[in-house]
Structures are given as structure tokens and as C-alpha cells.
Image 1 (cartoon, rainbow, N blue to C red):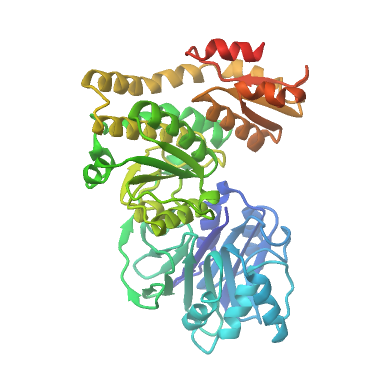
Image 2: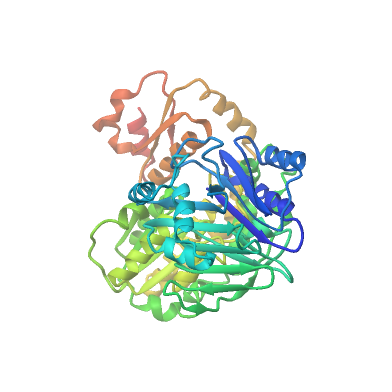
Length: 530
């Protein structure tokens, strides 16, 4: 995921710009860059690490009191120095951008016809030139006119040498916030990027544009009206970015699962609508179905929840990939509960799916999320916050298991509202949930054996994961993890489907992982494996 940092300050902003994107390094990137105004625009980029960018800044003594920086994952154009952000137009306008401008090709053709010369393959260069084409002495107005022509998702920050103490940001479908300090102001895609300079932030809403100077900031909504957005004090944890005794953040976060689940359950004294917000009792009272929308690992948690909701709560349920749901025609049910699941609360496809569900007439929405200040939390009626803490590893671990806890609490709540959960059964389920941290700790103690098993995969090209019922989504998650982390191809199937095609590819060299707990389907699973 790309990262944006911008600053308008009294002193040199280069250290802040570099520190900000360094704090976003864990998200991954293939290039990094910055631009500052010091009479003229000074641009530095690197296709190595942020540390290389910092070394360049030191070597060239790059300084300025207004600037923007960026980490990039390539979408349009290869990861080269030319394609790295910021992008410059006519040595006057500099822009950084997260997201994808879907109509950049016709915009580019039009600008080329007007004489603009393009030196990259990126959609972001179109933004820089379009702002320049609309500039008439007012950066805010130029950005407003430019974004009115965009189709797609974006968060941008723009500066110009003609107004050296000003910065303008805009967002649609990608997060952006204003950082508020006593005499300086900032823009960032994530509050953690600004934790060294301020903990006070203003989250921009969909379609907002922010006009930022050293002394003040002003926010305009999608209609162009000046609006007031609340200033939020964010909490940051220094421990989250310290590895401690672990080899990498993913290992650390795997071992943090017991604590994350215990923290998520800490305030759960009993089962009831109050777990999901003040208005939950009324909103959940007449729910007749549940639709879970999510992406990736969060979608797999939704697949598990679908089975729980039907078996325990007796409610029709479905789980759908958000990027598919947002573009298809569906039959709305005003009494269905739409549940969106995301670790960050900023997953673009899930936010778009939520918006689509609301447009279709779904009245009741619930966010299961790990970030209290996220767009998703702000845009839903009800909320359940997992307490997984910051998840730095790209592959989700503790967020996934806490999402499952949250979805099971929702299942029990709906079952109770429908008269399907007696007091003694409720207590048994709660006791089981509270036992989870200890149970997971026991599994984590098997790490030496698991490492030995993993060595058997290192020279394999493919692997097969099998599960039945609730454990098929877990098999999917296992296959995803193998692909994400080791780059070994993994596929998951319901075990009963093995004989309907996949068995043709299984040979003595292919490892097969079966999710095989001692439940009602164990004997059938054994039969499949034999």
C-alpha cells in the first residue's frame, strides 16, 4: 500500500517527510521519493530503501519548509526512478498520489494535444499536468477543477512553487488526513506517519479537499462547501514497532494472538446488542439475514461466520468478496444486516461495497475493524472494534483471529435475540472463548515441530490444503499464507471435492495439508485422505 506524507512548517520539513514514510515502510514499497520547495522544486527519489533517500537528502543538503513524500507500489508503470513519486509539472507543481485514476488515458491524450509532454507511464503524472493546466494563481481551485475530472480512487497531496507556503490534499476512495500541530500542519495517508510530530488529526471524508498552510487548514466537502471535521487525538504505541526477541513482525504478531484475543474479550461481560453500539438493540431486533462483505483474509473470516450464523443463529447468511459485490446487481433486503470486515477499515473495495449496499437500500450496517478512527467505522451504523493492536506484517495474523472472535460474538448475539441461546449455553460459549488464549498458546509452543514440518515444503512447487465445513475457509487461509509468504503455489479445496478433479494433480511429491479436528466430519475427512 502506498504512503503519503506532506508538511508545511516553520523549519526544514525533510526530516519529518523521511521519518513519516519510514514509519510506513512495513506496508511494503518499490520506490520512495520527496519534493520540497526551497526557491525551486527539489525532487529526490530512490528505488532502494527509504534509508537511501535519507542519504541522498543529507548528501545534497536538501531543505525546505514545504514538502511532500511518498512510498509507492507500482500500479501504472514499472518501479523506476522516473515513475517514482512525486511527479512534477513544468518545474512548478509537485504531486504524490495513492490509488488509481481509471480514466487517465483519455485525460493524458487531451493534455498531450495541448502540448503537455509525458516522461512516465503513470497515472499520477496526469494529475500533476492537469493541476498545472487549471492553475490560475490558486492551487486550491486548480485541484478542485482537476479532481472533478477524475474517475477512480485517489488520495493526493500537491504543492507549487508559486505558493510556497501552501499544500492541498484531496481524497476519494483512499484515506487522507490532516495533522494538526501548534504552528505546523501536515497531510498523511495514515496517522502513524505523523506520530513523531502530532497526535491530533482530522480525518477527511469522501470527496473532501483540504487547503493547508503553516497557520491553518480549511476543509471543503464534495459540493465545495466549507465544512468542519472533528479533531481526533490518536493513540500510538511505540511497542508495536519494536521487534523484541522475534525474527520478524509476522512472527511477533503470530505470538501476540493470545493477548490480542484476550484484549478483544476483555470488556465482554455477556452476550447482547450493547457489544455493537448504542443503537444496536433496535437495529438488530428485526434482522432477517446477514451479508458479510470483505476482501482477502477478512473474507475467509466471513465465510466461517456464514456457517456459524446459519447453524447457531438460524439466520440466512452469505459472505461475498467485496470487489465482486460492488459491481454486480443484487436484490436488496432492507432488514438484512450488512457486515463489513477489515483490519484497517480503509480497504477500498470494502468501502465501495459498503457504499453500494447503502445505495441499494440496506439500512443496517456493522463494521468489524481494528482501527477506531477508520473510514469504515465512521460510515457504519454499528461497530465492533477488535483489539489486535497495530498489525505491521503484510500477511494478516492476529487481526484474522480477532475478527473470528468478533463474528462469533455477533452470531451469539443474534441467536440470543432470536431466542436460540439459553443462559447455560451462553455461559459455555463464553467460557470457550475465554479459553482461546491458553489454547492458542499451547499451539504456539509447537513452533519447533512446525518449523521442522515447514522444511519439507521448501523444495516443493505446489501444495494442497483440504478442509470440510468450517475448516474449508481455514484451508483457504492456509493456502493464501503459503502463497503470500513463501511464493509457493497453494490451492485449497473442500475435502469432498478432491475426487471431482483436483485429485488428478496429486502425486507423491505434492504435500497435502488437512484441517482435521476431532469433529463430526473427521471420519469423512479420513476417507478423503485415504
